[in-house]
Length: 607
Image (tube, rainbow, N blue to C red; front, side, top):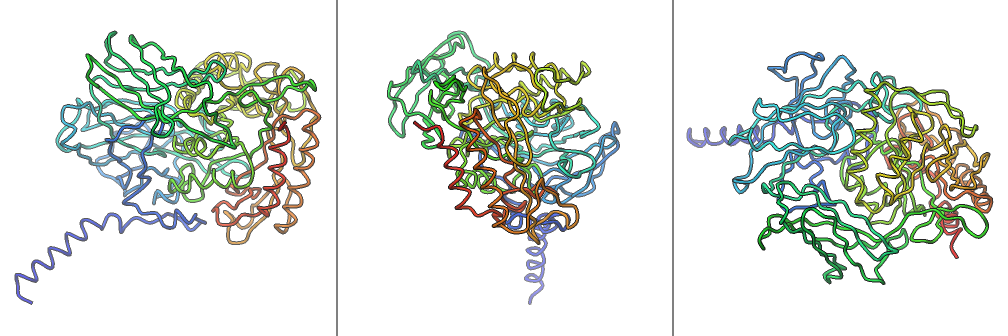
């Protein structure tokens, strides 16, 4: 080989290493079980799907992938050097982050990466979006602080236009005290065991850039009214003048079926056809919606969205029982307690296919509802529920400490006395979560509190929630310290169903029961610390127990139960009471049998 060829060969090899070496160094941390999606994850193409399906623009840039990271002492200066690479958007404690390290209240996590803005975006405002960061985030672009945010479950963004250069450095600093703080944290704890799981610190949803005009649509809030044959659309606009026109068009496939316009930022009442198609678990029909912002006849901005015509309510039936209704018809809502945890990604599903899988299997099992338990999912999870036809009960992630739980006592529940800071933070984060999820049709019930976990000022919080969103039901405290407010009385009982309280003015539901445990060898988180409310030895035994409990629930429907929640969709860490294993590789119960009884329950109120 000639000298010139040798030099060229060496150059090509070095170039190849420079392009691929970073990814070649990444590998999942630890040796615990993983999902098939985690095992096949490509670090060069992490969660590439558009992250905000309820309001979509064609132009955007995904910043997921390998970033630099450093773990530093809380309050110290930003580091000059970094300790390695982390795969965003997986929490630092997770396997798929490639780090797998615990943090704690005395440490902070610092991220850093380079990015460039496409030349085609010249003259545009550039927004930097974070799907979710747990818990306190401070953000710099080119050493200019562009903003900060507290809250682990709702998206946020900053306009970074003024800080941009040709080549840019993004730095993010995160602090999360987990169970040492008052903030909403769900099932996270610094000492994982039993029903409490590994902490989640830092970026755990997609980070992305978006170009917009100085005048643009910032948010959409859609409210269906099937009784009035209307769809109410409120567009929040940045940089608008009173004369700017917002125009909404609603489509059934390619056919426009309705539309409306407004100026001065007024809510638009779109007159829908009297025979509008209604959304339900049996027929999850979605209308396409296009929203444009015009000034003097010129389109300043346009977004694609979708919506559905549906109504959630309660009503006293002829037998005197208060029932939950969908579209003015009684419907027994039945589904699993869904924790939304992953053995390899913790809070973050490895792929969008994995995210959809849990919803699809819930549908396959014959359920019509999911209780999303003390966690909020990425926007695409709710899109999957919208598309597949699953009603969602959305919990507020719990936080702060808990008073004594008085599950079987009525109207004298004790409450947590929170600090002013803790209370203000709860209200802020709860509002952000409702705002984030408001336009997703699948959301049927808000659940401000689970049991007594951080429960405070129940009547006041429920009244605010109900007034802020009258279009949904409010379940004051699922299994919690009970007050006579909201739309629902929610009981918990393990393992078998039991109706030990009843409310003649609200819907009475069984918000948790079951917990049938079954260990599947080679598909468990830990070999020696597994537990369930009931532990059985075979799929048949576990299925027999499930069917026995389900038949008991069915018998309680005539006596007053209007909904039920079975614990749970999957195993989670040392909890082995899932219908599926934690790695989603084994369906532990006999699927045909549970589908049959589940469908019987879901159809029990059909007339």
